[in-house]
Image (cartoon, rainbow, N blue to C red; front, side):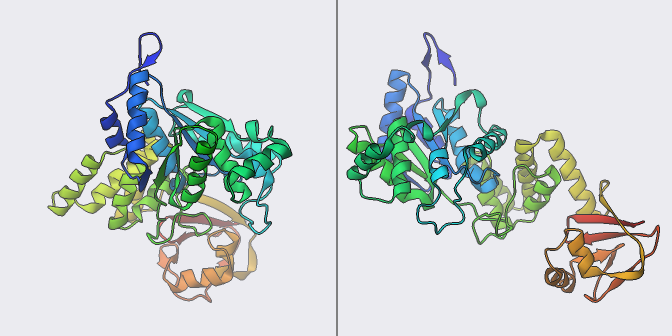
Length: 393
């Protein structure tokens, strides 16, 4: 944010802001209202208040979460005020129906701990000095039973959307953002603001990012995610595994590259001027640098090239010491012990699919056993990126 005399803020032309903010957006309800707010903001030298709510029970972020956080950054780029709202009050309520295990009831200590985890991650994208981190217990905790009865009388809807909608009233939000799966809740906030005599917020919905498989939305439970706190090499390797078609989606939603820049990259691929792998390499470097730094991105790229292009072994390999013995070790059980498979069944499938090698030789038989003689060792590779050296003592 730049300042121009006496604390007023200098903004880019409203239409220019709107064009910049449209990138990756699914829907703006309503766009004419957003343009009007941007015009007034420029005229008064007052930044807009942009609200985004976050679930306090899931503080470990992956790239899917960052789609909205990056859009918050875009509003910061345009000089506006973003509120990273942690739903601690609703988190301590949990799911009132008791049917959802994904929204457990949290203690105040858990909420506080998760909020600290959020801070460490979101400031990899957002500017700390220009971000307000707030908690909805600040106003919902003061409502009391009478206040909630009055709130419920204004709009007939379930308790959770109602509480989230009141957050917009309390913050007097100009814009609220969320995923396309949150559209109904966002509309509740818009209508509640009208009930309280406030100008309704504009709603801006963002797409749900597809995971590494390119089919399901990114999710830790599905294992198709890229965690922003993962090691640089892991992030880089996962990104290099996505399809060429999905790569463009990640360019649009997971980077600050402009639509014009992305269109230029597409043209170079289509004309044969550049290979898709080179563009994917640029993408992986860029994202790793966002969550680590440029040096880590370069090292991850170098390691990836060494392992996959030249078929060499990485310099740093996890070593695990195991007790030696006269009896050989069954390979599927060993993979489970090393954390390379979740079960013997999964380990057998990995072997049958040709995804396991020992000392550079592919394991073809799921019944394979290896000796566990004293002072012996072996190098196990699973998939393309996972190496473990086993040392038998």
